[in-house]
Image (cartoon, rainbow, N blue to C red; front, side, top):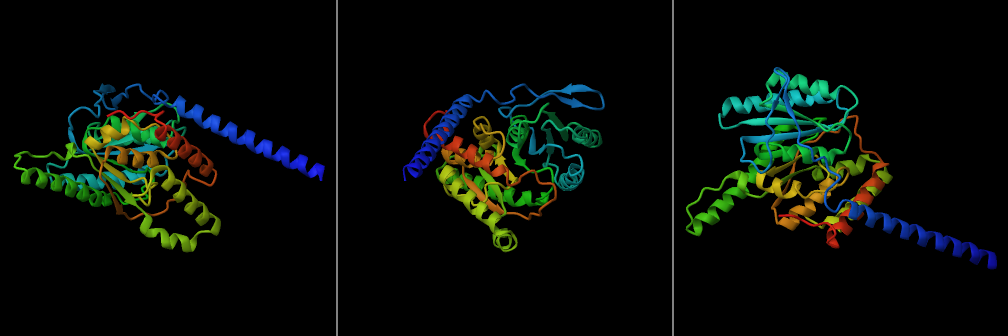
Amino acid sequence: MGAIWTIFELLLISAIVLAFGLAAAIVFETFRRRFNHTHVEAPPVFEDPSSLEPVPCPHIFDPAAKYISLVIPAYNEEHRLPGALDETLNYLQRRAANDSAFTYEVIIVDDGSTDGTKRVAFEFVKRYSVDNVRVILLGKNHGKGEAIRKGMLHSRGELLLMLDADGATRVDDLEKLENQIHAVANKGQQLEDSAGRDSTIKISDVPAAAFGSRAHLEEKALATRKWYRNFLMKGFHLVVLLAAGSGIRDTQCGFKMFTRSAARKLFLNIRLKRWCFDVELVYLCKWFRVPMIEISVNWTEIPGSKVNLLSIPNMLWEMAIISLGYRTGIWKIYS
């Protein structure tokens, strides 16, 4: 009996030590990220591959010079990127041909790829000109969240869309997000008019966010996935609910649109660089009272996903950091 109690005491002490160590690690990591010092802060250099001359680098605080910017993070996407870019640029060119006010840019952020992603990206710059397609090189791999943050902060659009390099979401679905953001802006315009104010609201000045969603596909996914994958998915949704609150059913879809005003607030504050930056975006939207609209989009699973079961512990770790950082005030939010 005494031996059993000794084993139980050892297990209890080990569990307490492990919990204390984990809590200490979370606190340390939260403080480490307190002032955003781990981000890539060096200004990017946009280069014209035809003349090899650097192109002036815009910033999110500059006035918009394009109608829409599409930010594509790419890490070792040599094979999937060309198809996605062909589809995207064909769509953008068609819209531009039918509407002279529709101006665009595509920003490809190479997140430290070790394959031919950089070469592929610059081939599209040569084909479509540096005014329409630009490449940011991060030098080493920092994570999808950091790649998107960098692209957003140095874009020129009134509207800013993040989308994945695999082309899993149809690019013309951006019109669904775009229409909803315009509806928010029009509602604001009507409120201004009813108050007797004669002002024209620019879409870039209206804080709004539209989140592409695959939630409508969940029932089918539940029927085809293994039970343990469904269990993990439900558990992840619960943790997201605890960390960021309710409002968005699918936080992880890589198809999101922001107005320039919203992007300024969100991407100057975001700290997470990898798995759960999407969850942090939802939290920051709520903090700044940025209207969020969730819209169903067409989505196809493309082979080659970099998210797997081993990503789950990293996601849980980052959500613990979010909760501690914001709820304790360790992470300051700058307006």
